[in-house]
Structures are given as structure tokens and as C-alpha cells.
Image (cartoon, chains in turn cyan, purple):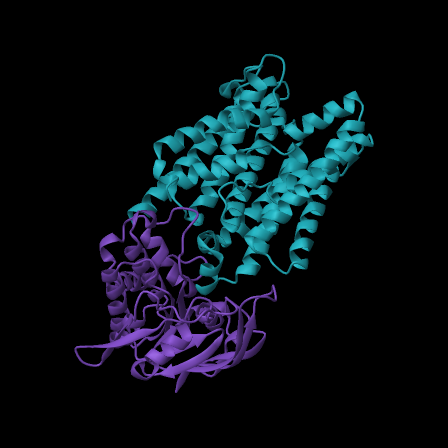
Length: 337
Length: 270
């Protein structure tokens, strides 16, 4: 009982933190924006520059960060649970390789047109991710095994394969293209239209609800596949279902932001250390925590480096590693499981 | 009335080499307390896995209360059969209550929290296994004997009709081995559970179990009451060890190796 109460507390705390970060971060930046001036009048007057920066530039980008962080943290939780591997992250099954390959091809061919508000780089990257998933799934079906090890090995193999193709494309690309490729692969957030964010939010939200509905099954699967099966979990269906949903969420986000490293690895561990292994709480906590973490990283990336902007993928690792190490040193029994 | 009927069951691992379960027919009566004995690789664990549906037989079938096992949805199966595998360890840290609570999975609705009844069943399962004292602890901190009792309690929380145990006394010291067999005996007597135990402990099996099935190389070699099955001849033929039978305070047969060079037979396919 007591434990449940403390899990609820962590969830509430994270939710409040998320909301503060969501509306606080857009105030920070090279141009200072004040809360009072943004909400001077409602709806904002046409000449209100603060409101313009807040609502049409920084808030959509912040929302994109929130969605990307939430989706990757959730996917990380799911991959770690299903593969029973603490090193698993949303990219373990080859999504990063596939989406990078798609993006790199679009950059190499010089595609710049927009389709339904999405750039061709985004669409190609999404298709690349789907293709890599399809390959992993086909390999596993050919081997008639959806066990953790099969999926892991198939994913790693596919990822290496696509990474080799990405390197080849990088090698034959010209200077500007190569720069665009690297920039994409580090992962960064750009200003987006609110419409794009809303579309992404619908997809990520639906995916989250589907995964949350499987929380109990994930608890059992993370303890062991045979154990889950004898306790009444239809394991193959849950494994394939949750992996497909988590991968689609990841692919959709990565297509817009590039493969931002580390969020999907570190946020799940922070919450596993904090509240234990109950996925009913881990999933919402990680979603909110991952979102808040990426919003903070992006704010630092775009605000504190003068006129240049650092790709957020660099900062997630730089800021995330000390947090994870601090937690490990303070909760050593986590390692001695 | 038979609870389990194993009809002409055969199984081979996909690699097509090594171990094979030859067509086996076996039945377990309701309320039975059955031991599976035999050397490593005789097919004890495989048989248990086939009985709980973790492995799919190439031929034959398993009937549970007259119904083919594969016709039962996994959830319903988990309400009837509980299985404790050997040597379980977890990647992520879990508490004792979380592990025991997993036993309620086949009863709890998707979005429902545990009811008072679910919690009562878990507490009772823990107390039946003498594990109530460490219910608040983390599984990783427990000793081997305590872990085994927690896993047993998690199985009991399923309120099953039948309990399948795969070498539950593996790596336990003598006192914990006896304790575990006493708990199993108590569950059988007081809860009316049907129990099937795969074990290497000839002497404890002879003392605590009602019926023994002796297996060798994927076949049933002998079955029946302990006194009938556990003979120096059978043990020599199945385990390849020459033993002396000692009688100890009444009917329980005890076996000790004859001498230092008691290994008499080599397993050809070993």
C-alpha cells in the first residue's frame, strides 16, 4: 500500500514538473519573453511580439520536444521490458539505422518538396524505419521465433546493415549534403507548425494508451517469458504488439527529429531506480519525465550557446550521463539485482 | 478420475539432435502426489513443460480434466496449472509481493486494481510457504531457500488445481530441502492440490511422495509406489550407480552408493 502511495506521488510530482517545463521553457531563449506580456490580453493582440514568439515559435517546438521525449522514453521502457535487457533502447531493433538510411537517401537525391506539410526527408526516414522493422519482423518469422534473443540479434544485424549504407551515402555525398546528413543523424528539433505537432500528438497519444493497457503484461514479461506464459500472458501476441506500437511511435518521432540518443535509455532507468518495476506507473512517469527532460535539453541547446544552436542529441547525452551515474552511485543495490 | 492424461506424447527439440521424448503415456490422478525421477537429460523437465504448455509436442496430446491442453486459453490454463521452473533469476529488481502478485494475473481484469480478495490470496499463499516474514523484501536479497518459497507462493497465488515443480530443491541445503518437501506435502494434504515434482532427491522423494515415475532417455522406465519403484536394480539401471538399500525406522527406503567406484554404467548417448 505504502509503495503504491509513493509511486502515485512520483507520478504527480513528474506531472507538475512536466507542466512547469512545458510553459516555462518557451519563456527562455536568446530573446527574453515575459509571461505577463504574453498573457497581457486574451486572445493576444496582433502586435504582441512576445505572444508571437511564445505561441508560434517556441511553444510548438517545445511541444515537439515533449512528444519526442515521451515517445522515446515509453518505447525504451517497452523494449527493455520485452527484451529483458537493461541496455535496450528504442533503436535496438534497427529503427535508427532504417530511418537514417531513408533520410540520407532523400538528402542525397536533393528532395526538398513538401508533401502534406512533411518534408520528403521526413517521409523517407519514416519509410526507412518501417522497412527496417519489416525486415526484423520477417527475419523473426522466418526463424519462427519472437524470443528476446532473436529480435535483439535481428535488430542489431539490420541496424549495422543500414549504418553501412548510411556511411556509403555519406562518403559519396558532397559537402553540403554531408553536413545535412550529420546534422540529421545527431538529432535536433526545429521550429514546426502546430498542425504537424497535433498530428504527431494523436499518434503518440494513441500509442501510449495501447502500451499502457499492456502494463501488467509488461510487468510479467520483464520478469521472464516462460514465467509470463505460465501466469496467463499470451506472450507472442503481447511481444509483437507492444514492439510494433513502440517502434511506430519511435519511427514517427525520429522522422521529424532524427535519432536523438539517450532519452530512451536514461529516462526508463531513472524511473526504474526511483519507483521499481511496475509498468502501470513506469509508462506514464517515463512519458512525462522523458518529455520534460527533452524540453529542458532543447532549451539549453537553443539558448546558452550564443547565436549558434547545439544539436539537442549532443546535450541529451552530456546532461543525461551525470544524472544516471549519480543515481547508480546512490542506489547501488539496483546493480546487484 | 484422472486430472492429467498424457497420451502417446513425443517431443524433439528443433535442432534434431540430442534429447528426444519418445512416445509416452502417463496419467496423474486427481489429488496425486507424484515424483518424476531420473538422471539429467531423462526428460523430466521436458515432460513438465509439455504438461504446462510451454512446449508443443510433435505427436500425441495432453488432456487436463478430459480437455486437450491446447484448447485452453492461456489465462484459463494459468488458473488451473501452476508451474515453478528451476533457477529463475530476474533482470530487473522485484519485490517479494510483486512476484507473488503475478500469480493473480489470470484473475485480474485489465484496468482493475487488486481486490481485497486478491491480496488475501497472496498473503495466504505466502503464509502456506512460510514466507510471510520477508514479504516486504526484495527478491535479490533472499537466500536460495527463501527464493524458492517465494516462487512457490507465487504459484499458489494462482489457486491452481495442479502444481508442477521442476527440481524445487536444486541448490538447497538439506534442511531447506526437507522444509520444501514438507510444505509440498502440506499443500497436498490440506489444500487438496495435485502435485508433480521433478527431482533428483531419491530419498526425500521416497519419503514424501506417493507415486514415483522413473524416467530414462526420454522413456518411462518404471512407475508406481515408492517401495516398488525404488529398488537397487532400478536405480542401477536408470542412474548407473550401484546402491545399497538401507531401511530406516519403518517403511522408508534409503539408498547409499555401494562404494567409491559405484558408477557402473555409462550413458551411451550422454
